[in-house]
Length: 446
Image (cartoon, rainbow, N blue to C red; front, side, top):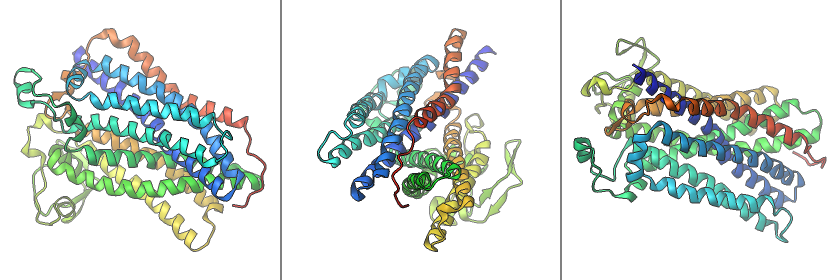
């Protein structure tokens, strides 16, 4: 009985840690892009206010980078502590992306130091701007390599799986195979685009809040520019997230059919399958949903007569929880609302209604920031729950990988405490530091 509680606690600890880390990582990916855009526009138009934006956001990024580094290190330790059997397998088969990620981190760290401490040290301002590119690239590459490990968990390869399942022996190891599992390209493109999406909308919400608070025109001009920069990243990332998201769901039909069936609420395989909106899981069956005829089959197979997977084709012990269908609906709902808010902004902008001066529009941007973070976290939890009961799909169960000894409890409590205070403490420190660096008083038109 204690073992069952221990497995649940291990999952809770890891889930909460990653829940917080994903927010830090997403902002840490989007912010360098926004900073570089600000610096470029400052150089291009000789606008000191854009330069001020780049410098102030760089300070925020340094703090986020420090906290994110501590968080990432703690998660690496946590994986070794909480999932030892999982890491024992990964260390022999799929560890290379973790090693390579260290080099991406080093690149980001080294160039961040040079970027921060070389302002106004070059005759050409473009030279300084170029130093920031490896910072943004390093952040994206770190996300890419870590995602490769998750892709391995969803579609394992690179060793003789049949032999491992038979006697636990790891043979025929191909260490480079982890860089190109069947789900790597789709998963990496979706993870990276959604990270930029959430990170950009966090900055959008911040700029909107500050605009609503701003009293003088100089501050308003300042935060309008931050909002515009973040919207550029946010709009592009939203479009990419929608495309890669649809591709990812469609790929599950062949790569993880049980996950696909649970997400869509399919108990039995069927053709002319409807898309189910809402519903309540009751005794292993989805009820009280709204069907949209044939749409699921069309999206999954390209034809209304195409057959989609059902859970009944697989042992019930391997069924993911049907709750992920509701999580998928909430993900679609949140994403649709963010897209509608962006569409409204673009429409008002085309009609020259000055949407960035509208308190209603700014309030919607704050809502969009909340929805974007919710969509990111909801999608990640849905993805991980959808692989249950496997930690490595069709290879290792979560219960087999977990550390069930009570001796890890004190360390686990410390890790939980760190993540409870990580986000509030980071926001507090950034606010305090930026408050001591007020917006420069140049009068620049919006």
